[in-house]
Length: 165
Image 1 (cartoon, rainbow, N blue to C red):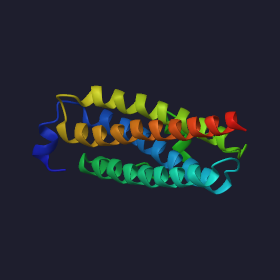
Image 2 (cartoon, rainbow, N blue to C red):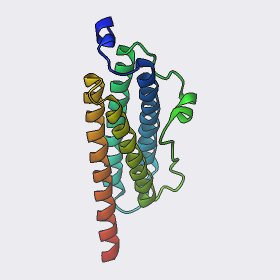
Image 3 (cartoon, rainbow, N blue to C red):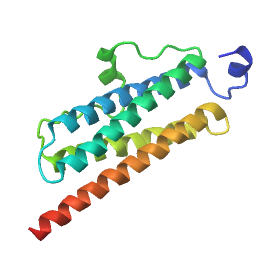
Image 4 (spheres, rainbow, N blue to C red):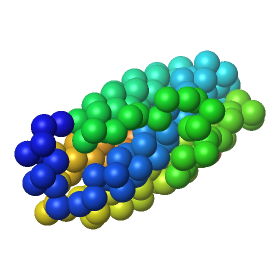
């Protein structure tokens, strides 16, 4: 990032980079959790659920790209090692050891709820201090809220289907 761009920040760039790297670690773990969950999922409406998981995985990868680009603009280095992802992560990784569709959906809903909290916190941190990061984080937060809603809708459909049986 140019010197003027850093100069106008109303926030410590190093602190912001650290928070963005934590969010980046979350995005990589979320990407893998969605991707592998879509591969192993079993149960009612598994095709519909898997399609949703793959779509969300692609969004998480896009979020990782957005965060990495912003970290570089701020003069930082994106987290370089997958070994650091779990150490830095706010939301962690919940391995889909039980492949039942409802269990995988529950795990990912929990992850989205954590992400919503994380991004809301970053939004408050940069509000009126860094409009570029604010806009990036707002886009990501909007996606995470939509993901939670999508996953809960699939869960509701499965529950309705099971009540009819």
